[in-house]
Length: 402
Image 1 (cartoon, rainbow, N blue to C red):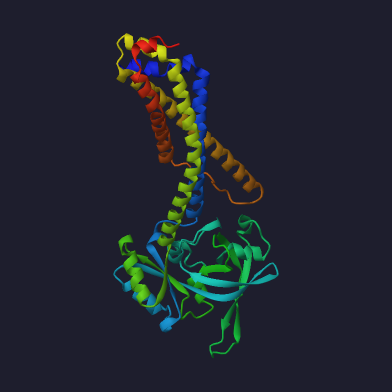
Image 2: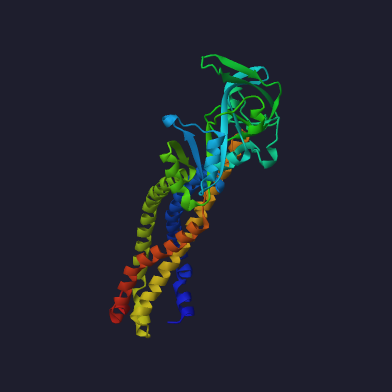
């Protein structure tokens, strides 16, 4: 049988039984759409979480802090020793002191941090509003970044509206004689809020490290971020730092663990969607069986005119593949449409109530292509049995069938 004849005959059901054919495609589409929506939800949730992490330098960095054991501390000499390691490209420290922050007469407790732009890149610190300190801001003397918890301290709900506001600080420095006394260092200037970080749950304010040095002597740092030369040296560098007694955290490990968790979530959601797909496949199998019974006499005539059993089998399989593939395409369209509507409604609500826009459903192109081809395979599988029965019919019995 020629390809052109096969294509014409396998699509003839759209003319002879259009309603039943489109209902079968729609049923297949509903099952496929359920898979698309549920797995798309998994991809969307994964994207929302991983978007909070800056890729690039942050995935090649390690967070290092002293554990208190072995009397370890992070000083300028230690930072220099880190940079001398052949596997470490750079090291950036962070200093932190308790402080009081004042905004429009209201005062609260925070930690005032000092760091350079390299630390922010390596630690993956980003801004939900405003901008992050860059290399051009190293000499900045009147700008500060705040965490969202600091805004809540003052009853502010809109991070964007807080950009450009002025705050002041008073440092609380422990006395050098070892007593419980606290020395208060009043910083006689106003700082303009440059950005709001995404560090939820912490009361942090961040200025450039040189600016912080103007008001307090920094002998020890709270922590440091070291950038490793290459991904292949991450584990070796981490083990070496741990052996020295430091506490080490790796953002790449967090990303890897999060990805594994979401792969499990996506698989679970796919199973629930697959149940709907199986139900649709059963309906499609039933339709193909009914079609076989209705066309038994037609099959007998085709065999009498010279069509071989393989031609009849190929015809039925082609019809089921076409229905399955079109069902997959319709399911993809339904899933994308539903996801787009939900994303639009959520973002509209977020814009109305001052929230952050999110993309709850995400549909990678490779996944949509896979699900369309998979639907065609499901159509093929549901058509094998009816096609085999059709090919095995005796031509004379088929002609006499009523």
